[in-house]
Image (cartoon, rainbow, N blue to C red):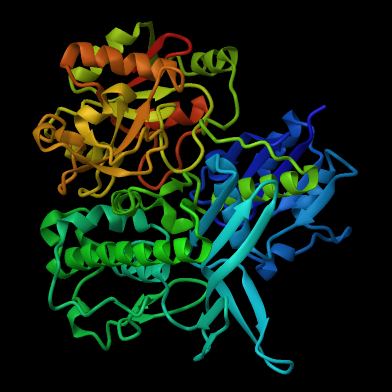
Length: 567
């Protein structure tokens, strides 16, 4: 009988994962079930796993925040332990929330397929840890950047860490630095909040960056590998702020978010600051990679932590280091803590040396055709239902109709990969503005494309990559192709791409093939199936409700061969 380890991340991007005999078989973020963006405390997800799988061990990750130890009345148990115990009374429990970066590292390493690797974590703030200066003095700080070396079955060694602290102090040990400087991710968060978003929404800053340029009036954002303290004010463990009071160039006489819906309101300083933080953090990551190779002597490198989702930087460093084997973890945000925690404890306990490269991240719950059909029937007074073939769907898309797709298990992580996607015609020159309006997103946000793997090199500079199945890179579109796929080519000539094969996703692959027969373009415009501010849809009911409250008219359910048309 399989040995199953349930891992959870209780904080933002709350999630649960199940590792069965060393294989990741289930992953879901709580927001997909609760419908609350970045929801923590993955109770519904735990219930879903415990009701479907035998669980032998519970592993709790996190950040060592005191709130993670809050206990229930009467039995004085952790709510997570208590919930799982109601299914499995003798459940064994392990807490590893005191080393947040270790679980990030484990997530990336066990998914990478490497048997030995260096690991670079670039994060906002991880666990609060204590080190002794001497017998009398100690200092505390939050993990921000770290370098590890890992090998099978479960050996992880921390070689270097930067800790953020609010104390006015800088202490350098051989392997650890404590100071109140602004780290790479904190600087990015500071600019993101200045631009009117939550600090954690750095992807929006990344999308805005190409609208700016280098501005000689903006002071240097980094000094000696740290955010410029003349500009940034750190607040650990939360975000950093831009010091507008002492930097007149950043002062504004209006709300920060006024340009989000109106391009005419975008100030030069806002666009240029977004460009500067993207450019400067890329250069800082280069230095961290060089430090990683120097400390470890390895050319196998895994990258994780919240900043690891920056697909512009990921592509930049792929081109900068063509001789390194770099694995970018697609679930590198805090949701991946659940995966890392479960995998680490499994491999350490079972002494399992088998490498398992993660080739698919369609890891959500499975819904039977009967379940889906029954739910659709409940909405039959609001939708017309047609039996349909892929070539008919491709024709609809080619005629500039938005068609959503719902199939299989949902994608892990923040990227839609053809199972919970909104699809459109990439050749429509007005496509970006049209779909942004329908999704109620900011006007400047770019869109991704899914391309048949065998045709990817004809359209994109793959920078030596054999594939990009998890949409982790914003690649250069070849100049002679940019006008053809204008809807998904960003203003800097790039596109975040997913490559797909028939084996990875047969229905989606077939649809793109049919679209190519009609248009000559082996690519579909692909964005996440949600509206602005909502999580990706998880269930068929979520999908149908999203259709009803939007302008979207068509949904393709390939497993049933259905097209749903909103009445």
